Length: 334
Image 1 (cartoon, one colour):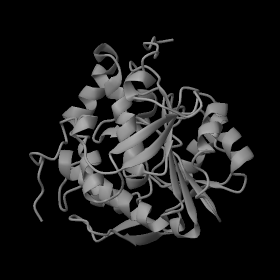
Image 2 (cartoon, rainbow, N blue to C red):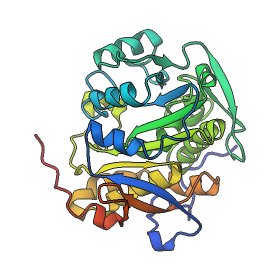
Image 3 (cartoon, one colour):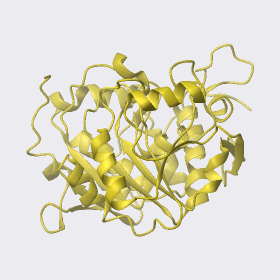
């Protein structure tokens, strides 16, 4: 199988404006309320599909990670709205403070994720989930414990990413559910290469997206998504305290039943910011060809890149991305 660095015409480094998209529309909810109450309120709009034993896929962060979703917000939501749910994670591909289960559990304690069960899904082994219609995979290796859940709530801190361009719901489950040294290796590394990060740009986005599709197909229709657009460094939360300083303004929270629609809307809100406010994050997305995540999700039939944005702060009025960010305050470092 060949390994390419870019595929002309697939949109990896090219933003597709809304009026150039085709197909049906999904619903994406929006609130400016970046708080525990705001998270709970928007979650209520998409909580209905979650039944049975519920997993919450969340990036719990490296030790003292500065940009992760605030723990008190998640604690309030789980205790009040998902009292029997467990946070789920997997160990990392790279060596660090989440490389082994023992190290990972210490990091969870440091970051305060002690108020509910946290299931490190690859602690007990591996499960292969089928990848339907993929060109890179027929199956993806996930943490075995993913099979123990009936529903998945994908709670994502939207931000940049060193390889993916951006990390949204697609990255949260595509990378975050795959097994540390097996599934993540299949996504990141050319077989036989000494460079563990040897797969880049379009091919990397496609492999990550096929992994996410395996998770979506496994749980559908009992899966739902929330993206928190706050503290959006160009760096992923996996970089912890070494993340690049935040320069992009905080925007709000999005929720949807459609993984493509929510990631597309998150990207659209960033692009709708003033150039001086979105320059760093847009540059990160485009130089890594991160927008290929969106076009490939559409090719795989994972959702719609057109959507109706619903402003839950104003009686569910329809709103454009431009109107949603018009009162955003430029980011100022504390």
